[in-house]
View 1 (cartoon, rainbow, N blue to C red):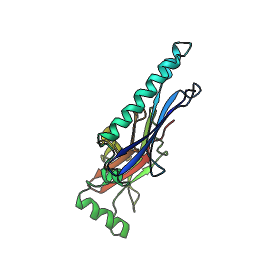
View 2: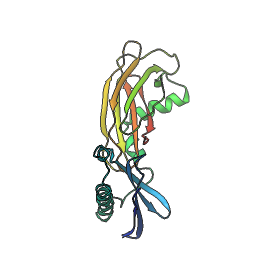
View 3: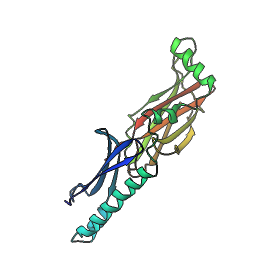
View 4: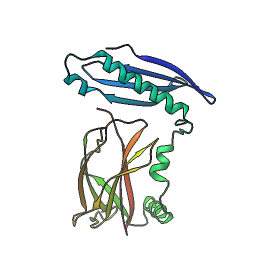
Length: 214
């Protein structure tokens, strides 16, 4: 394991503490944590498993990647990447574009006055960076429990730092079921979540799961 880096970066009226360390050959990753006021603001992990193929492992190569990653994060801070990081940013990206008619339908559904669409999980959502993400959901009416065929299903990756990315799309079958799978990208800065949404003439519903590191 190689000695890491610790740097305090003053930007605007905040001091960012950037910490980069090698997790060791048993877990060949370089991890950078960004702290503000003693709390983690962001994290970034990059694998150097490819360097293990060239035995013996050259520590200078790992050190070089650590230095590059540490400098890149500091550069991002100085360029203003974290100037606006409200805790509810991801929530806004995931939910703030919902049309008024959908909001009204959801309100009526909560009041029990209309039989609107709802999503049901057939298996838990377990998204992980770099892993195969499987989606198996059913669209049904919340009161009668009847399936909703032909409902439009979309799966997006939302981030606290990047624009949402489309992962999957399709429609439910005659039984209201939808199944799909997609490879998620490697670890990246910011908090990320997968949002599964479903829409039809019967309404709109969605589910969200935070993407974890493996």
